[in-house]
Length: 128
Length: 411
Image (cartoon, rainbow over all chains, first blue to last red; front, top):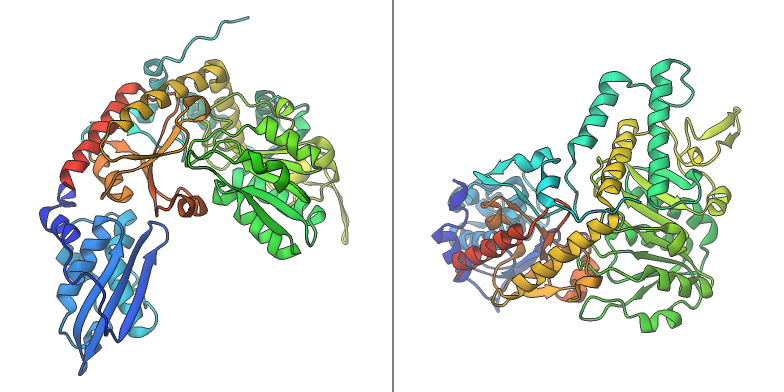
């Protein structure tokens, strides 16, 4: 499984991230970082009648952190905000579909933790 | 006099059981000795022997195995003292590690001697362990922190030193940068600091394992280092300080062993070095450090330094051939210790470290506990390869081909 860590889909998201850039009319802008790794992302959320009308992100960091942010944007756009407030980390990890070592878990979950802060005001970080 | 021989890394490797391991089916290539060194069997064995044959609380025990434990622990202290050419064994305080040694100075000498408005001079290349304790002290007493800057080669801008020393009470500086590999000219810096009336504390965590260190010759006032980076175990470190300073300093932690006489409302302190060693010490670790010192002494610290300089020279040359690589730190191997930091365009250091781990190569990626230095370099993180006595040029070659493979993955 380890050899799939940089499988094509992850590298593709890293090189050509989806929903990348700034949303000029975002309702919520939330920065998140892993000071230990130097991964940073900013999530831009546009709300529309209780749903996530649009989403984008900017960031820099390792392939895992940036690919996971890209995948997350695909997963959450258009969904009800109430639902996204408790978006399960495991859903994103399943989408990543790779074995994440404990040392890299913070990279893989940066985007979803940032989403939780954006919608709840704090991370309510799930204990694993 | 015995003529010391050049280090034969192949022979040295046989002394380190862990180097027989494979990672992902490949032989372990350990390039993270700046974080912690591997341990020779000689160190592991003496610690094991202590637990199997004479485990006892040292000092004051009147029975045989306690006396044996005391003798072994104190003999380790003597060997450490000789290793750094301390004037007296009383000047060698065992701590948990470099960090604790520096914090000991902060809490004892620092609290008494650093006052509101005083200046503490540090550098931009300090490890957090020689930065955060002084931030805390400065906040506590209202002192000011000043920083010697580095140039683009990762060298201290020493032309500014004399001007920056004005009003400085303490200069706290690393002997060798754990991130850049820069070896600082401590003797000259110390002389300038003393002329300006400042005391000098050296973070020697990256120096004592890798080069001859003579505290008397350097003429410094405090010198801190860790056992685990010099073939010894974790949990044991050293603060060396001038005896007069130690005599005048109040104790650090209070408790057993550091006292002479205790009454209900007061106590008097034990003699040096035990005045600074409260509680049951790390006996096995101390004994292990003694064996580590013997091991390094047998190799010869001049030879250790020569071996690493050769490796660094080779690695700098080989790494430079990688397209786009950015190398940090001095180009001159004469002032570049055994740690090399670099970045590869478009590959985050964590991805690089993960990818080369597939080939059994252990390198560190991150800020290396030098976040202000990362800010200065303008990068969030670097990859660092660091060398020791058991590393060989072919491991540098493997690293280079590992990086090239990673570049293909990310191409």
